[in-house]
Length: 183
Image (cartoon, rainbow, N blue to C red; front, side, top):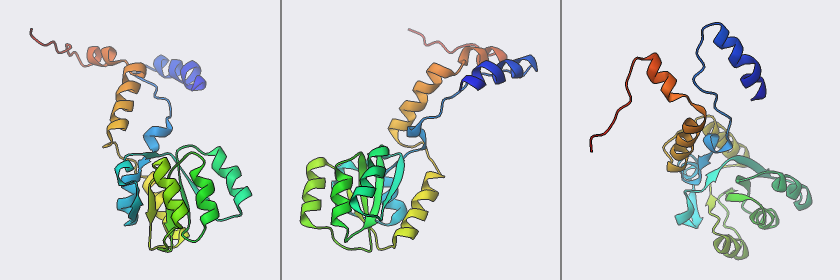
């Protein structure tokens, strides 16, 4: 960001290329909702159907032992964790970190203690009739097709535009007058 602001923007302006804004990268804008994951994966929601508006910023796969998995889980924020439906140890560990949803593969039901803990923490559990690799591939493709229909993303974009976009300069370049409302 500093390079763009200090070096690239002045260079472009010297070349008579107006820079109207420099938008910072935000994880939220690249995120996807749990509801979108349900749709893309054809998943069954096992608990917390009222929390499908949670936003997922990263993906973690729980396919190792618990201590190794915890190292990865603690580094990520607002993540979806994909793991086998039979991996109760990984599922419980994921629920104690920044997990927005658990995605259980193999269409295996989770243990009641996992369902109870997820319900207490209001973390949706999704069950898919897919293997882990296919599930991860679908989610990865979904991250690459970011849409802006979630209200939280629209609000974020409005905030970014207010902070980082020179609307007055654009209006002047287009010879447009600001719209005023009559009282």
